[in-house]
Length: 206
Image 1: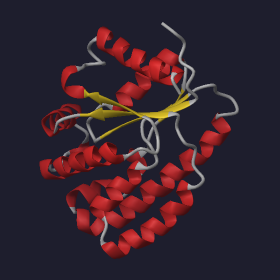
Image 2 (image 1 turned 90 degrees about the vertical axis):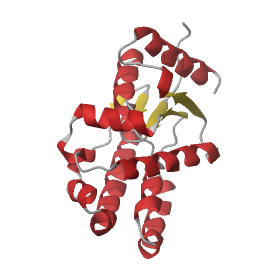
Image 3 (image 1 turned 45 degrees about the vertical axis):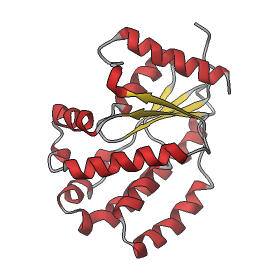
């Protein structure tokens, strides 16, 4: 198999899609530095899942600032690591903001986010894990995180629709779309090697 020559790639998908699991496996395979979203550090997240309207803005701004700090650090990592793999893309924040914020909140958020977006590292390409809502809900139930126990199916279904719409129009960064209905990169080494092959071929073609 040819050697992948990417510098920085991100894995994306709705909550429960398996993006962190894939990012970890790929980082091990390619010897890349792994950057994971620090969602568990958000002090508003548990309350947000219980009462989205009351805690949407605080939750969103915390995530925006946290992700931006991580993106700033990528410039330092780049000096010492040949490859970086992240389990999120910075632009995802706007998907959640559009879904959760009021018009007035979105206007304020947008002003802050646009300044930040001009300063972040741009990945070579994105891997988008596309999944059905049924599969997402099954994965969320299976991992039994306390912070997700109040997450509703309607919320995940709406979020899934927004992700699919976003990636159907997103042309700024090259994207590999992997349909998760017929692939198990955790339980099947053969399936994981298929993903590795896609990543390698995409990186060579950049």
